[in-house]
Amino acid sequence: MSGPLIRMRSVTRTYGSPPTVALSHADLDVAHGEMLAIVGPSGSGKSTLLNLMGTLDRPSSGEIRIDGHDTGAMSDAELSGLRAHTIGFVFQQYHLAEGVTALDNVAIGLLYTGVPKAERRARAAVALERVGLAARTRHRPNELSGGERQRVAIARAVVGEPALLLADEPTGALDTRSGETVVSILAELNAGGATVVVITHDLQVAGRMPRRVGIRDGVLSTGERVLAGARS
Image (cartoon, rainbow, N blue to C red; front, side, top):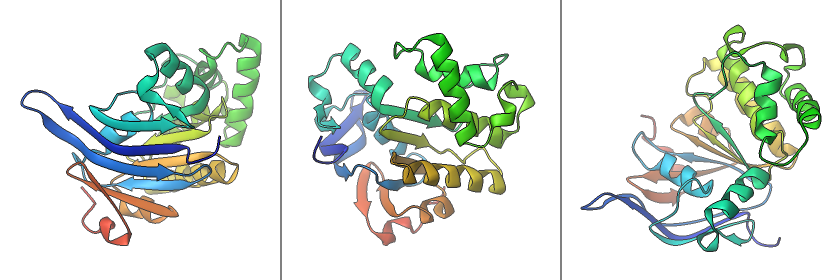
């Protein structure tokens, strides 16, 4: 579809009564094939923004379009289908199933797409090779390092070839070297055509992204100046 992959107009998210504003009148476009960081301190609204981009939550007001689809007009089932085919998620804590091999952890990413089991596992093997873990397919999470577990999580997120990859603090639980490897993998996936949005408080990670969008107290801003003081 033409137009941006993500289009947000005057998006506000409030919680509770009296309402606490987590995101205020946010306007944001993310183009197809773009790579950017959403950067801000803890409690700034980064995760709220990611949940809205990923259709895991609905805004209190405003409009969100993902790949041309007006998410406000979609049912929960339709949003689930959109996530299954268009959006991949990478979280700080990996969320891997213990006692299950890396191969099958990645294959889980195709569970709700209607792909037969044998094909799911074959595509999972290809995804693990893309992140440099072809030799670790039979290893379980407790047999992998933190960096390797995060790479399994990335492989699971991209096994369905989603147009949009949302990464929430993907280096937050990693040492510097492992974090650099993860950022390099995300950059490679972006070079391959995926749109990548990285949520982070880390200025070094944000500095490696071609575009940075700042967030503080639920308000978005753009430009280099937004990085000042972003570290939590």
